[in-house]
Length: 240
Image 1 (spheres, rainbow, N blue to C red):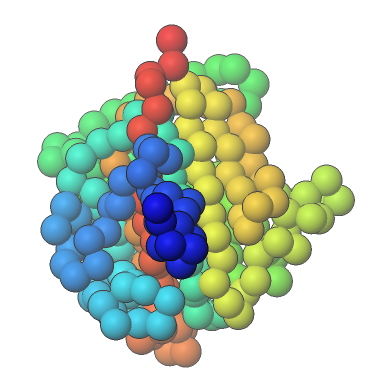
Image 2: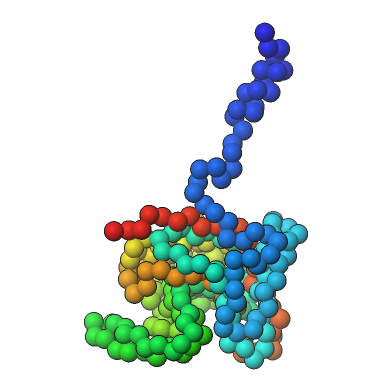
């Protein structure tokens, strides 16, 4: 016969939750190295703060006189849910690329304009291009909007009264929790649980994830940081 305290102990063991056992997410950052990542574009500095409060962080530091910099996953992803937390210095602009690409040779892309017509765009060798979820601590507050880096520009700006709640969701002074859902031609973003973008676009079906440190234009922007933590991704069955 079990003693009372033993029974309580056994119940506690069986009731304890198992974190991450069946949620399907995998960490993109191991907390101690940049294994699985490679830098493209500019020469911003990416380091690791392994002992940071709140957990290990990837830290991007802006550098004078260099273009946009990107720390890219070494593998591509198609349909997925990406979650991460980010904190950005209020004087910077940043973003996270997804379904993005970078080619060793220059290429020409055929794109569709707003009226349904087509046009061509040259993409230089070594230039990162693709979808970006905006990180914008400025009063403009376009965080969570979708920008097409080095291709078509803004695809969805969270402006106007319809996006008032989305703009208010971002905390320019603190940590912000992002969620990006990419399923077929459906792209959705959320900040701190608040829906921002809901876009349909099928230009690019697959590509890497990348952490952007934006080029800077003023002395006060040099040496400022963007920090990411809890980067995790769940791959989805490819949409038919």
